[in-house]
Amino acid sequence: MKKVLGALVGLFMVGCVHANNVAVVDFRAALLQSNIGQKASAEPRKQVAEMDARLKSEQEKVQKKADALKRDELTLSPADLKKRRMELMQSENQLRSMAAGMQHQAQGLEQSVIEKLTPQGEAALKAIIKERKLDLVINRDVAVYAAPDSDITKALIDRLNKGK
Image (cartoon, rainbow, N blue to C red; front, side):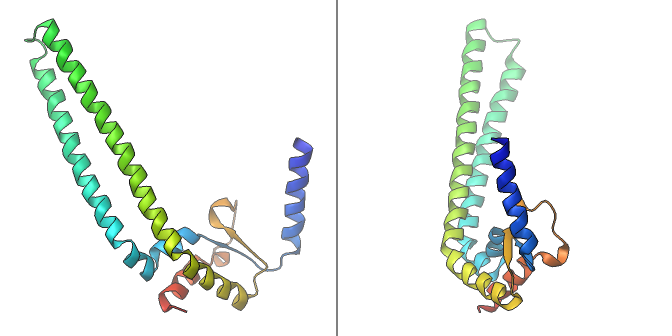
């Protein structure tokens, strides 16, 4: 297994050695930061803000329950204390479930925006690759190191903003 992995890394390194012009890009960030990305994500951002407000409201309710339980803990009968602890635990579990669902929904909204904008982003990226005569473009997230002038994310944002 190590030999196969070593061979793949070696082949990649050989390919990189022959690449004269290498660049890195954060495609997702470029799409979302561009004017078209900002416009396309306005409604999803509004939906996420509404979800966040709803979540904060529920967090406050659960916190009030926890504070009330702590305040009343010494005066409650063991049965009532157990009942209220169970109710609080159920509320906390519902809150965690709600937060996870909202996070998943927010990620889905972002992903749909990215999918919608990808064709325009790819066209703009291809134009930059052609102009700069790039041999290799890799995602900035997988690069161990990239010189600042090899990052074409800003150029991609500018290209998307110009609509070319």
